[in-house]
Each structure stands twice: as C-alpha cells, then as structure tokens.
Image (tube, rainbow over all chains, first blue to last red; front, top):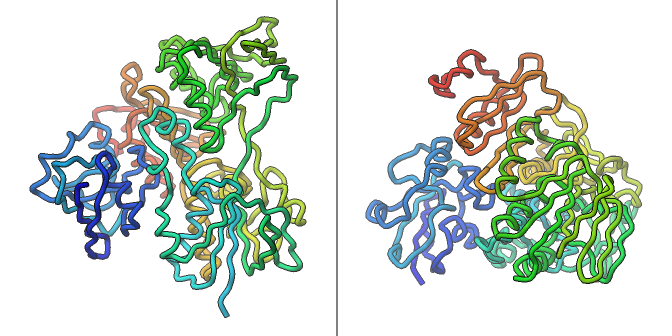
Length: 106
Length: 404
C-alpha cells in the first residue's frame, strides 16, 4: 500500500498507508489528521479539503476537472499551483511517498 | 467536577457535537447513543455515491474507530434510548440507566410513511439507513427489475430515480405537488430538473397522488387520476418528520421539532437539541422558527452547542446551504429562498451552468447554482455578510461575480 505523509494544520507529520483508490481526503479523515474538514463528505461541494501537493508529484495526479478548479477559487487558504481538493485525488502506486501539506484554514 | 454529556443520535449533528466538545477542551465524559448498530456513517451518500457504488462503507464513516478511542468518545451502538428522566437527569437505554449533566438530542428525523392501503407480501422501499441503502441497491441492481415506481418528487426520490434511470431502468415518478421539489425550488428550476429527468426517459406524473398499492408478483399503484402504474419495485420518498417522541414524553416543548432558542437550549435546563430535529430561530429566515434538514445545519449547530456547553454561549449565525446531485446537475443552494419577490438568472441555462439569485425587498436572500460552484461559494459569503450585489452588474455576464 502506498505511503503518504501528511503535514497537518499544526505542522505535525503523520505517515500513513493508504489503500489504492482511497482519496487524500478520506485518508486524512480516517486517520484523524488535523485540518481536513470535508464538510460535504467528498462531493466536491465545499472546498474544505484543500491541500498542497508535494511538487514532484504534481504531474502524477489525476487531471483537475473544471468543477474542482472552480471550487478551489473559493478555498480559504491561498491557492497555489500545488493546490488540490483532497476528495478529488485518488491514491495510486505512482503516489507512493507523496507529501501533502494541509493549510491552517479551510 | 467533571461533567457527563450524553448525545442521542450518531448522525452529523451527534458526531460533530462530540468532536467539537473535545476541540473546545471539554474534559468530561461523552457518550453517544445510536439506535443504528452500524458504525457511525454519513447519510447523504446513501442516495448518491453509496448507491451508485462510487463510495463504499468505509469511505462514508465520519471518523475511524481509533478517533473515538483517542478522543474518549464512548459509542453505544444499536441501543435504543427508551426514556429520558428529566428530574433524575438520567436516560433509560437498552443496556441500563445513565446519568447526564448535559443531554443533547441529535435524533434527526424519520421517514413519513404512505398513509394508504397497501396489500401484498412485500413492502415498498424507503431510504434512511445504510441497511435500507444496501437493500435498495440490491433490489435495483437486479436484471429482472425493469420498471421502478418512485413515489415522491423531492430530493431523495429524484436522486434515486436518477440512479435508476441512468442504470437503464424504466422509471415513473409520481409527485403529489404540481411540480418537482416544490418546497424549495422556483418553477423554472423545477422545470429544468423535470426536463432532465424526461430526457432520461423518466415518466413524470405531477399533481398526482397514489391512493392504493397492491402487490402480487408485481406492484400495481392506483393513482388519483384513475390510472394505474405497474412496477417491479416501489420506492417512497415523501419527506420526513422530526424524531421528537422521546423529548415530548420527557415534557420538553415540541411542535414541528424540538423547540430551542438561539443557543439550542430546549425548554428544559441542560438539555439541547440540534440538527434535523431542532426547531430553532434562524437569522437567515428573519428570525422565524425553522427546522432545516441539511448537513450544514447539523454540523454548524453542533459546533454552537459545544461552545455553549463549555461555558461560552454562542448563538447560531451560519448561512444555510445544501446540495443535491441528479444526473449531471449539481445543484448547490445558499440561503433560504422562500418568500422571494424577485429573481435573476445568470449564466448558460441550456448548457446546465447557471445561477438563480433570489431577492426579497431588494435584499439578496438566496442563490441556487447549477454546476457553478464558484457562484455558490461567493453567494455563501455574500449572504453570510448580508451583502446585496448590484443587480445591473449581476445581470451582465461579462462582469465577474466578485465585482458585483
């Protein structure tokens, strides 16, 4: 199972193993990682699972659809080119070793 | 002296209440009673991702098992609370009696049942719990189940109808009111959704009631028009009623829900009610008493009572928002549109990407957005801040929304 490191909203590191197909959001919520709120439960409707993806993994992610793109515009923390919504990124083997930073505010 | 909190209900409101209490530094004991024996899960996906298979059991859990342990939140699953003894500050549950200092009713709502004669060996299907969803999915996914009758043209009925229609089933929806989702949508949006359902072959019968159901090998529904509809499965989604019997029997004031004030305190000291079951004064409904059935309402109210219980009374002032997903139509609603006197449409209606802005006395009160998430998020900010955009600018598509 791919290993993902979350840096939570307090700056603490958590290394977790996530099953293939789980989303970054689900991984965070289920492992009690602080800072991912996921108000809408993964429907791409709330922008409270905003996270910053480690640079080297950006091109290994599934492509961002228009909906996610629009929702990210409304995210509270500043949007950068590393911004993604955790509920839209599913874990694959290519993401083994991924580091995800969670902003302080959602 | 450490206090005890008992929460009745393990839905969005109950679980968030526990989480928020710990976040606020509450150090007493927290115990959640859940009638449902399944590990606490979110209900909205049951008519969406869980039904179509894109979400599984473990992806709709609120929290992991470890979370409850780490946060010392005790779960009593599959336990019925039979009585609340107010003078003794005790709940009587299946496994015994438990004392509380604070009691939170997060009991939610239950399905309204068809008040008509039903003859047959099977029962029509309702959706509320995960077990219902498992049963429904299994019933709908069968090859020999081709004709589906959905009674009720509200959110639940229509989300299920959309799933069945997309799966290739022949669906008939019977709705008592003249149009779909009449409770919350204006005619143009009811019509927009109706057209989409019809494009998928759904047979919509509006302004029609079901008077009787009869089942032998198949179902036959007798309609108020005198016609009959036959089906392999019948699914009912005709609304819900607040789960308030426990509170009522304990002498707590209830009407359309358990009555609470702006701090979610019931008529009895130390007892609160939040979520689908709570009739509360809502500033976005001009202070009127309302009962809102939504995730946002449950979650935000839970956060408020956690602060209040921890000695920091906070009143509720969060813009209501909601969503439904049928086919490619993702409808997001911000604010409460009831009583609007003016509306403005902005965007591409034919292309299914537009927003409807509702005004009352020249004030923006709500916005419904279809596939325009950025509009929705902006609308929430505006309504939260009681801001009304310039109508002329709003009507001009070339001006960006955040410049209106």
